[in-house]
Image (cartoon, rainbow, N blue to C red; front, side, top):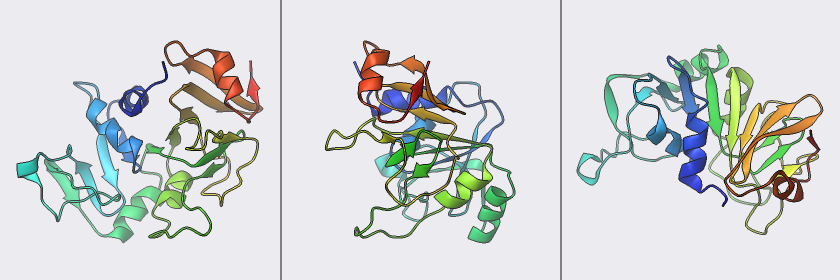
Length: 209
């Protein structure tokens, strides 16, 4: 059975390490905060100016002034710090954030990432993804293996405008986990009852043994 959104987020949380500063992209990556292992300290950074994000609020905790970069309401922690966008992007561009876990529309076999726009569709802006993939230590993509039309999102080359070239380190999809290596993608884990052949059949990008 392929993983669902929460199972993909839980698998991504296994890549976290104690003491990390991590940025979570919108969509499935935001769910990773629900699966940080007990006893592990991970500080979440939001590029709109918040360090130390708490969990999503219950209905009686909602504060419209507390939002993440994806415009979702969140909560604060006793140690939460606030700052302007210039300081936030200074952290990102200065290499202070260890990992970014992002969604994607396409990933190429060489680690190219496209996740910020589809030509002709209205978007609010490019967000912080371009800075994140250039400035953080490690980039993990969490996404469905295929789009709504059943077409693969793991390609030989991206067809959409790039967010960054050769920036992706690890890809977690509903079918499994693939590592970006020098000569292509390497399957390192499959979802339950999903075979490596299933992943190969759903992938255009080169998969190496």
